[in-house]
Length: 142
Image (cartoon, rainbow, N blue to C red):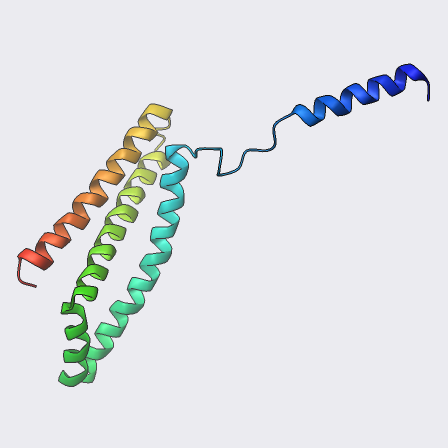
């Protein structure tokens, strides 16, 4: 290898050392649409757990007053109410995202501003659903 080739190779290696590393979550801020998408998937998984709790409640209802009273007592506790508020928030989030995806299936709202606006509407709807559930559970006497 001649001297000129060695020099070019050394220049290339020194340039590679100055290049930034691939972005990762500590330095890269996820776009709003990515965060909403990830949280929609998480809400879907969490709602699967809620479905298990709903089935347990229905089985207790069919089992008799003793089992139903036990499960209903848990549902009326602070932890049970917080779980129901979280479930309402998740239902609102996942449901609003479902409507958003229906619009996308129809070819509407694909521009970045429209998609970001719909993402904020999903957040507002989920918050309203969660706050509505909290109001019903804590102020409505449930």
